Amino acid sequence: MAPIYPGNYNSKILVEMWSDFIDWGKRRKGENGFLIRQLKRFNCKRVFDACLGDGADSLYLIKEGLEVTSNDIDKLFIEKAKSHAKDAGVNLNITEFDWLELDKHLEKESFDAVLCLGNSLTYLFERKEQLKALKNFYHILRKGGILIIDERNYQQLLDKRKEILEEGKFSYSRKYVYCGDKVHGEPVEISDDKVKMQYTDERTGKKGYLILYPFKKNELLQLIKESGFKKVEKFSDYKTADPLADFHQYVCVK
Ligand SMILES: C[S@@+](CC[C@H](N)C(=O)[O-])C[C@H]1O[C@@H](n2cnc3c(N)ncnc32)[C@H](O)[C@@H]1O
Image (cartoon, rainbow, N blue to C red):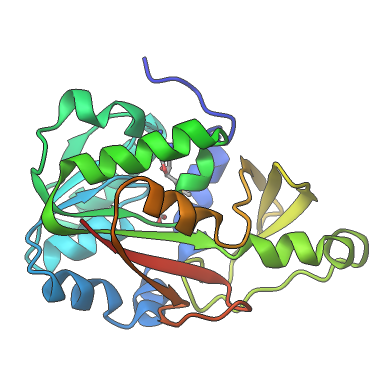
């Protein structure tokens, strides 16, 4: 059985609200073709979606003609993605591997691209584990293949923690990555080593939670370089790097 990570307590409630939290259509509008552009740029066909979630990105890329392997360790999320795939008449090719064990299960250099999207690496708290996961992504990529990984701009949360927690001053554009207007996420605890996010369905008042590791400024970038990637391009909200953006994206070439 896969180990349970501190951030990995996806209650049924959280999985149920995830698609409304993302808003699939608005996520696509926000990234405005970024994923496909990067995949084409590096001639990628075989894609490993390391964290399937509810299927938002995998289903989109399959429909765009890519060969996608969709991975997750959370059974509830996998069931949710399967049900979305069924509704869309699309077949998912699913694996259920822990990122930390990918090298035991997958061939070296067997993918053209690895995706780790939706602020997912932040489920891991230990530096050693974060690095191992990144090294495993590197391991399964062919030479010249790419890892596309994103992170929430946690540095902003850390810098503004007093205003956010004491004055309720947290807002995000809802244009990128997490775009839904029926479910919103906000940090309810912020410390240097963990952030507790609360997700609220504004229609029902139901709440889900995740505890995540807040990467500091340039911390993820440094880990990516340490894991072996030589060329890394940084984007913010899919455009030029910006310290005030909601999210950062990295395109990392092996
Ligand atoms: C924040 S969700 C993002 C899901 C999706 N990529 C998205 O953009 O909406 C993070 C996902 O990563 C998965 N995950 C977390 N740790 C994992 C691990 N060690 N191995 C595989 N999947 C993991 C979780 O189960 C969850 O589905």
